[in-house]
Image (cartoon, rainbow over all chains, first blue to last red; front, side, top):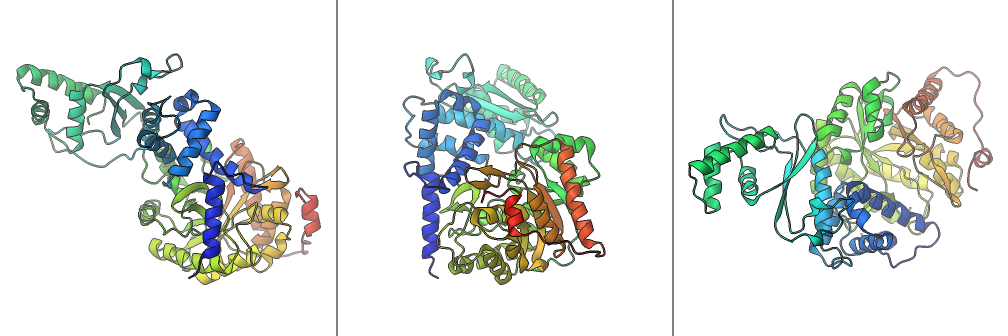
Length: 236
Length: 298
């Protein structure tokens, strides 16, 4: 089947909506406005801190680079913010030098929203086993993006490193919480992501993985940690 | 696929986050049903999902999608269709609907609705895709006429002929948006009653009514303003000819207090009740001139 006119029409719409260098004429301009404004509004709602760091000019430069090189693929509108974050993390973009942490910040803000919408999950643990709250995510960043706020806007002033951020949604209140965790707790969470485990076996596995001895002191501290994670409803 | 025997859901509102709390607080009896976009609730949990489920216990829900993009040359997303089918089953959906347009090209999402060229080539392309969607979902599928502001290419026929031919060849249902017909009639200078004259009304499963605004030199379908009288008149005309299973008032922006939306629901119900009542004197059909005088851009 010849589809020449449809192909032309698709290329035309892609040029109008995804090519910032093209100037649509007449009423075609409204399509560019509708498409980009919806995207801008969505990212602004999901990632207000990242958006507030960028000037209007920088913001549009970033958006056009994203739309040209890596236009959104997901049918779910809010996932646009995730796609923009992954673009900033993995591809060269015009603001990478000035804001090297932008991708991580966009992702971190997206994850907070994603936790609000995360599915409940239906897994169950056997008696005596610990199960991880399915509405959780553990992110690892080079930049301390969780410190960015109104009166502190430049994480470059803090050391780069490995920041493990745990976000989760409390099953009853449905509130989304976050905390920075140390590498050992991060390893414990990663181990539980593979499936439920008995407390002592879990602690011994994490000790072994990190080259530590699972002595009485380690196990006692570990049990207290697990209790705390359970109280916070990170473990169920 | 036949939509005969499907339960009539009545007249309702598109569910928006902004009116969820109000609806849950009151469960208004004036409302027969709700409409949701599956993209907002698929594979989700949390507060909004629970609220939707609570409302779905009380009101039947019509499902209206945004992203199937039946017009695109890119293959339909199997992954998305699979997830959609799971959601439709969970939602106990009686049918599915989406738009006769592009919502993506080359796999890239616009998150908006862009028109197709009104051409024979486009008909040949979209018909098997609509059949594919309908066969895969194993339920009636209704396609919606979209509003548009500029052509997507060289149009070979009027929009109503395009819509009718697609629906008949694909053997699918129609979601008729009367506001879109009005907006297109004003923007492209045709008589909306000519559009409505020969539609296959037996295929009209679902109806949308909405508001629009004047933008530059044309009308913009914003779903952000009250429904105007000429659009209600179009609904009156349709109500005498179609037996839809859901009529939805769409309002996405500038959401009014719930009472105002419920008043629009009541108006739509009254229009359908009058259309089904025994005839007295015939009501004169508004002319195209009257339409333009009532608020058109041209």
